[in-house]
Length: 147
Image 1 (tube, one colour):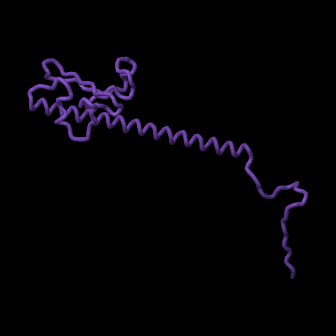
Image 2: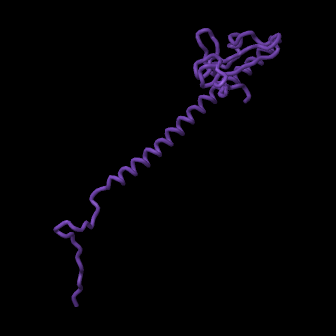
Image 3: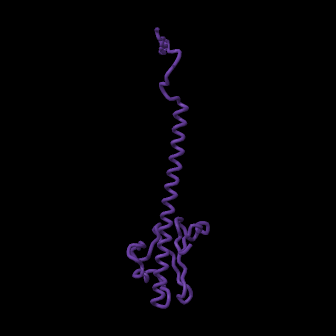
């Protein structure tokens, strides 16, 4: 008994395509759009994480400075008039100092410090990422110790 096998072949005139030879323009544009969307999400998430890491560094600096201020106050009975006085109370390498030995935040600006009445309390903060501390709309990102 003879088995009959059927062969499929491509017609010579090219009227019927049995195999795909290329992607269409719409398919390529769709893939490119999806890749661009995913890249935008990844880059945005990376930037957000970087900003949060810098903010955390600023908060940690505030905590170290506040601890140094409290240690200074325990030793001297009052808080210092400037932050330069507490440099010896800061752990080495934890807070960056400028040329005048003032602690500076991760954005390169000095931490804002003012002693209270009779040097018995203090106010300490960083102006945060935004540049102009005198602009009332830009104080939303100010950092305070313990917050």
